[in-house]
Every structure is written in structure tokens, then in C-alpha cells.
Image (cartoon, rainbow, N blue to C red):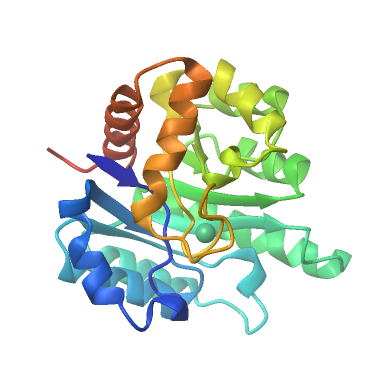
Length: 255
Ligand SMILES: [Zn+2]
């Protein structure tokens, strides 16, 4: 049974078949899905899918690209407190690829810190988005030692991975590791302890090979597990089992 630890079913690309697709996952080998939020609206949608499907869980938070209209962290806190299937604060973090303005980057850092404090208050882990902001992201997480987290779609160096693993963090990988230029991620997968790795699609984005360019969904998460299995020279079923177990432990899901 696969656990896709990061998929955005609130995306409009799923408007035509969202319910049929989500309902079909268990019979297609995907036993668990976590849908993170990117703002208040998508966090509420994630919580609603989690309430509707036994195999779906949610996270709530503001993605660094979605801070333009300001943030309502009280509403995120209330959502997390009222919905037992909200199992993390996320996705949160820094995105310097899309944001070049130093003042707005500073604001991203402030909101990131505030969401780390919120996670601590709620006793929840965090899902971190770090795009071309490795050093600053590391600096923020190091200032919140009581918070446990996962770097989603991990794109940093092996050196940074070692520091994160030292802090107790998990690393999660997408279909990007099936692309030809994924040398850096492969180095990280070679050295990371197997009990700290998770798999995800980041659907509808980042479809793995050979589906690159198509809409992604949890149906393709097995390709990520297969790629890790190949890099680590393990049977794919072993990677499927271990990554699902890691996801369950990380998000506090029994059974
Ligand atoms: Zn995402």
C-alpha cells in the first residue's frame, strides 16, 4: 500500500473527476493520501476531502507564494483544532524562485516563523516548501527545535540533508527524481536513512517519467518508490512498505 504524502486535489485540474479519482485510490494500491493546504480556502477544502474519505488526511497552512492578501493564522489554528484529520501545518516555507523582492522575502520569513510557532502550539509537524531558499529555510527551522518536519520535494544538497536529518527532519521526494538531471537528489537518496524518506506526487504537478507533461495524480506515486528502490538496490515493495510506514509515523496515522 502506497502513501502519497503530498497531493493537491483542490486544484482545478481535478474539477472534472476529483471524487471518482479519490474514491478509486485504495483499489489502485494507494492506501493513504495527504492533501496539504496553500491558503485558508485550500486548507478548508483539504479538511473536507479528509472528512469525506477514510484514506485522505489534510494539512493546513499558507504557502509562501500565497501571502499577497495577508494571512489569517487564527482561522488556520481553528481549522486544525476542529478537524482531527488535519495532521500537519503546511505547506509553509520560502520561495525565492518566484519572489525576488527583498521586503516580500522578509515577509515570507515572518509568516514562516509564525506558522512554525503555530505548529509547536498545536503539537503538529510541518510540511516545508523550500525553493531556491535553502540557507534561509535551514536558518528558520533551526530556530524552532521543538518542531518536527518534512522537506517536501527535497531539492537541497547532501550536506544540507545531513543537517536536517540531524535535526530529526524527514525528506520527501517527487517524480522529479525520475528526470535525467536529478543527480543531486539521487546523492541524497543514496545516503539518507530509509526510515526518514517519504514519497509524494505533488499532484497535479511534477509527473514522473514516463508521464512527464501530463496531469499528475497519486496513481503515479509508485514511480517515485520504484526510482528510490533502484537507487538503493532494494525491491520496490520494500520501499513502498517503508515509506508508507514512515508517513504513518510522521503524520500520526494508526494501523
Ligand atoms: Zn505542494
